[in-house]
Amino acid sequence: MKVEDIKGINDERILLGSHFAQTGTYGAAFAPVMAGAQAYFKYVNEELGGIAACGGRKIEVKVIDDAYDPANSPAAVRELVEQDEVLAIFAGLGTAAHSAVWEYLNEKGIPDLWIMTGAHKWGADPAAHPWSVGALPDYFIEGTIFGKYISENLPGKKVGVIYQNDDYGKDELAGVKNGLDPTKNEVVSEQSFEVTAVDIRSQVTNMKNAGVEVWVGGCIPGHCAQAIKAADQMGWKPTIFIGYVNSDPAMFTYAGGAKVMEGVMTLQGNKMYDWTDDPAIAEHLRIMAKYGTVAPGNFTVEGQLAAGAMIEALTRACNNGDLTRQGLMDAVNSFKDVQSDVGLPGIVFDLSPTDHYAVEAMRMLRATVTPEGKGKWEYFGDIIPFR
Image (cartoon, rainbow, N blue to C red):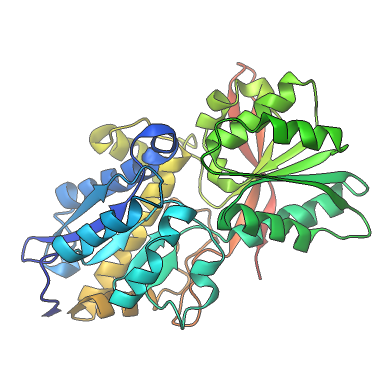
């Protein structure tokens, strides 16, 4: 087998690297994603004997905590690439943080796989950025879906968008405007905030004062939860949509309870962590109980999905006899209708050298309250294809 002459590969292991918030507010929100991925890699290493096609090599991921701060990400990634010589960067987290490193990774020819942000730009120009592939759906497309849903189901309602002032939030805003039918709905309030903002209640007040009846949140859990809680404290009851990056049960805690969240809508493409009768989810829960470091949730399911995609790519590269960075990208670009066990049936990874949008369908979720008073995300409607 052709094996790249880098420190990241030896006879026993394959080393990957990641810049990923592990501490602070963002670590609290998103660390479960990496915990789910790491648990799945440990399962592969210990119960499957490593990756069979790769001679039983074990997977190791070195994670450097960049605290979701783009000022920290470049040094972290340079260390992983230039000192540790990782085979690939895996699941880099955060639109702003990853924006600080993806050009460098493409210039260096480092596989930049299963990026944990849905910024439109990751897949917009595969010819210029052939080494980057996201694991999450496109925020612009998500916003478009929200906009279409609003015009189809809530015509005549005044719309507001509250969004973080970066590529994520701007993609969401642009998508909402793209999806809305201007003859049915008007955006009457656009409220931006910096990702470092501590308090965004004034933006919520501005939307309420503008007469907003439906608002879309292009925000991550801490800020979206604060906005939802603020609206509730004001006695304001608009219809609320929030980005899929918030689709974990932890949101019910962050926002102040199930009743506060009731009726909030989002999107997802994976099975829910509490589908205990589903064999794949039952296995995920077993893996998390044995190898995990956090409680299972929808974000740990997302982590397993990304880890599974990485195992599939490495297996294909080794089956092709080419465990090199280029061989890994060739394997990724061969994905066609790849179905994850923890993904909703019919939502697949489909890639090519000219198409780096891995996931191109989702389904609507609504926050509900169980008879016991607990919060629960429930799917409704059909799977929505992006194109």
